[in-house]
Amino acid sequence: MAGKIPDLEATVRAGTGKGAARQARRDGLVPGVVYGGGEDPIAINIPFNYLLTRLRKGGFMSTLQNLKIEGHDDVRVICRKVERHVVKDLPTHIDLMRLKRTSRVKLNIPVEFLNEETCLVAAPRVISDEDEDEGEEVAADEVPTAGDEAEAE
Image (tube, rainbow, N blue to C red; front, top):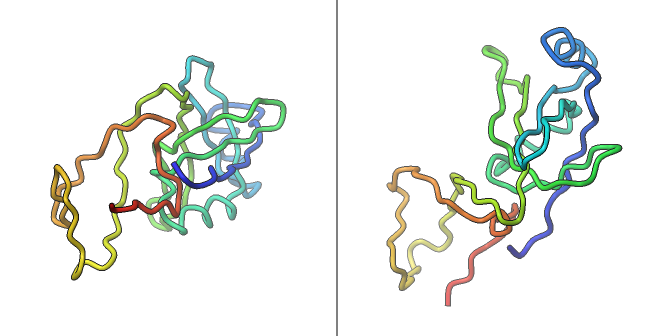
């Protein structure tokens, strides 16, 4: 992993359940939960505009994030699900999974083909843009960050 892990800032949500989530949305926040890693789940809020910007940049679902929550240690997370409004297609809830360095996670990593016309790579597996999206299982410390580029030798 060559790049810097991007930070994702959030606050702890006071309550849980439908009422607290609706209040968070009225306040311009997206409710969410952080789970896994052998610890108890934490209910969080992420600012709506901040999350929407990150989602629109692309690669959010397959990028390792450094979650910063006030009063808690920084932790590496990956987004497992973003629930969206049925009509508006805007985020309404987010699920994040904690990862330890030894964790293995299955991801759909987007592949961008550069210089397709002139590219020949000797690899054990041929990659094509018609491949079905099966996903790859990778270790948590090998999850690519946004902007990483593979180097062909």
